[in-house]
Image (cartoon, rainbow, N blue to C red):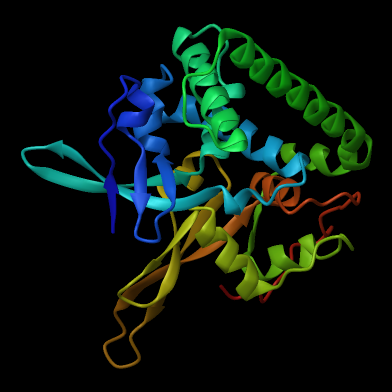
Length: 279
């Protein structure tokens, strides 16, 4: 359970701040999206992806700050549907603001808000910052961004071969995807661990009917995951029976996972498609 906390201030970012059952504050990415000037989730996720990469490049575990979640949204006539969401720490929301479209006035407002709140948390003084303090916070955040970009530049040569694979076609069972990722000595993962990560990232969910993992529409739209239809013939009636589809990881998804797992080796896909990787 969580609740939106009323605020005595006038900032809309205070208005959507929520408190979890454990007493931790967080912001819903879906609630934050319109306040940053984005009318479409697909455009907002560009800033979200850059923020996750920035956290990773800064040596921070992204999943500690960008937690995959689900949100029920109205679709008319009183009906609702479930969509992908993320629960963001203040640090995560700040990174999204820093990686948003700088032409948007909403982005500038968010950068100022989260810079001020971050500084208040550091000095332990929930008060109005002076213009000088706010300017100093903005300068420090810009310096952090420059350092993160330099770190990305350092990693680019090592990742060049792997990034080239993003234009390839095909997909892999989750077990096979884990084997490919594990070719990089810096990555240790297996089938079950990779399934867990896909769930944590909000890419996949567990279907209650058969307890199998299914791809979220968000991951399918970004071409990170795909689903392979499955079926069998009934042994007595001979009728074709549709089964739950098999979750598969695309080459683009492998590329994204490789980055999020901090991979550095120059990986290559198998020349012959891997077989037998049940999902």
